[in-house]
Length: 278
Ligand SMILES: Nc1ncnc2c1ncn2[C@@H]1O[C@H](COP(=O)(O)OP(=O)(O)OP(=O)(O)O)[C@@H](O)[C@H]1O
Ligand SMILES: [Mg+2]
Image 1 (cartoon, rainbow, N blue to C red):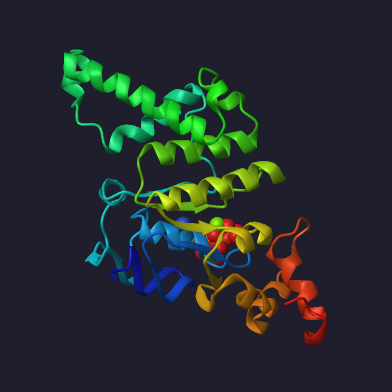
Image 2: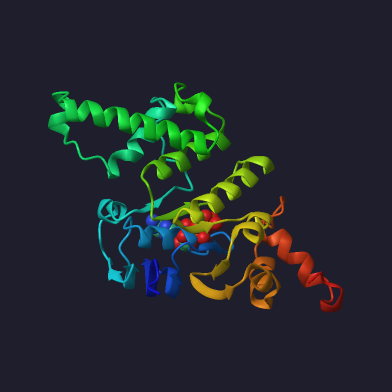
């Protein structure tokens, strides 16, 4: 089967820092892949390379077998490869529903001129866009906040809003950069349930995630980066026990207060193998 996404020997250098080093990876259609790794491991840079926000120094990116290396972010998004941002990118003054409507622009047909002249086709499409935005908001549980300015939402809900905007783009592949950061435990569980439902409907996921509970619960497969390199890959349980992964997290100074990967990995390292839960 052709991979939904594939990267081959992908590298990105910033001056003396190799943020992503010779990474090979693929993601099958309708797979949920988690990307984990300590701070500065290169996770966000990998997303930037895949989605055209940064060109790679070397290596290639493929979408459904088609080489898209060096494509602009808007061209990549037009394929249905949609991402969210670790540092949210919302229009704070605009309303919640307007923020989501911005995501619809990938599939709308009406040109700016038609819209400006308010031709019937444009008005029909406006209605469609509005309805699609409301639907996306309902998926993340924000339907009641549609008319509020985006900046009035608490941080966790702003993250859900960004996810709603990505959903409104009708993604084929959705790349989420730390989607549960700032979410309550129940919001995070809701998001995992939503990902499962969307996957059943055909969406492929790549998720950068620090919360190991979410990783264990949601991911089919985990890719671990450390200093830009892929150091492990496999089912969540196996990766969590991998000595290289544990070592990478133990080396991280701001070890995880809240059930993040470091906290989850550390006890496993300190526990003799025979007493570890399997
Ligand atoms: N635009 C940039 N210019 C210079 N250096 C950068 C740039 N973007 C990332 N880096 C560096 O590349 C490395 C990887 O950063 P990246 O943001 O990809 O890590 P990350 O795994 O997403 O970390 P975090 O968990 O903190 O989000 C870091 O050393 C970072 O300082
Ligand atoms: Mg990051």
